[in-house]
Amino acid sequence: MKKFIETLKNCWRIEDLRQRLLITLLFTAIYRFGSFVVLPGINPSKLDQLQSQTAGGLMSLLDMFSGGAFSNASIFALGIMPYISASIVMQLLAVAVPYFQKMQREGESGRKKINWYTRILTVGILLLQAPSYLLNLKAQAESALSSGISWTLFMIPATILLAAGSMFILWLGERITDKGVGNGISMIIMIGIIARLPQAFVQELGSRFTAISSGGLVMFIIEILVLYAVVCASIMLVQGTRKIPVQYAKRLVGNKQYGGARQYIPLKLFAANVMPIIFAQALMFIPLAFVRYQSDGASSWATALMDNRSLPYNCIYVALIIAFTFLYTAITLNPTQMAEDMKRNNGFIPGIKPGKDTADYIDTIMTRLTVPGSLFIAFIAVMPALAGLLNVQQAFSQFFGGTSLLVLVGVVIDTLQQIESHMLMRHYDGLLNSGRTRNGGVAAY
Image 1 (tube, rainbow, N blue to C red):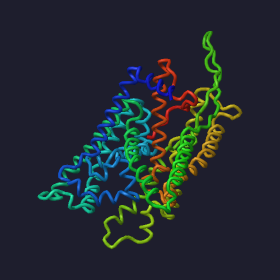
Image 2: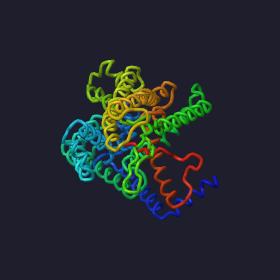
Image 3: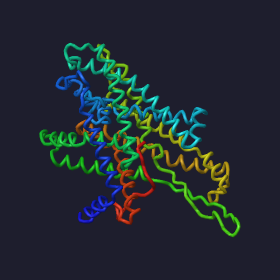
Image 4: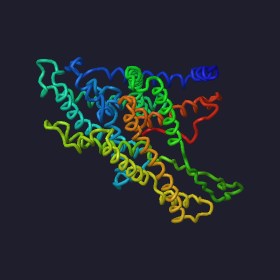
């Protein structure tokens, strides 16, 4: 404990790091404050039905990523997810469309153009999602709108406010990245998830003590131990790499020798990160969109697909995650391009011929990594459903796996690595002397 306190003091002594930490805390506090600013004209005391809607099922995931702003009818209700969706679309376009491929190879100027297109696409998504959110708000809590205001007149300014709120969150995230610590967008998602943890923890603890048949304190302790084990497994998943040795040929230029050093290509066990889960969840929301407003109710099959604890939902969910893991890994890592780059720089893998044999070797290694990685992430993704079968509360079960857990692990590791780099540059001991975070930064997005 004494060593930990001394490490915190060292963090505070570094002026640049101290300023970055304070700026990060300030911007996250602004984000949390905005999550409780209700849309003008909405009565917060009449949102009980909307909040009960987000207490379980798929809608609870949206509320978790927004830090409760979704159920509060806040100006930040749509959160940062529209920007994430736009970023995913732009990543796919950069692979499939030659125009965006060329733009991606233009360096800094191309990156600025892609960011501009991403923002334009984000605004377009917001202008579609904001009216959908307001229609759902009207269906679930029509009486929440103040008397004397019609929903028709309310929709236009509310849509503008929701879109502006999400763009302001994006601005906050970029400022955290530039002037704070960690990846700002990922940090905002993590703050929204963590904000739900204390309430979920208290609810789960209370339910174990109130229900005699639920196991009481012993069962709660077992839950905490299982959660700890899942977190440790997720850290291993995020940090795990397979290093492929690469030898570079020696070159003599004048009296100096260049090359000849051995380097490594780090292939991550889970190169796709949380993207497969996000893609799969986006597709699993389709049944919810079709049957949400049906007055006669949905079919039993559609109802099962809307329940994230049902067997049909989880079977399809696992299949989609495995498929998207292979797809996204193939999109982001190109063995042929890696082999050509190595050959161009006079590099080779010991024992493997340059060219096609090198590409086939890298592809084989990637496949052997992706198979267990996809199965592991699929298991992590369905852990909340398994926890729900053991009578764990819906809000608390979300922290046993899925996107929320992987985002938390990835962002925390990335932030710790950045703080440690600041300390090591100024000759202070790092945050984790007995097991420092290695393998480079790990950002959630």
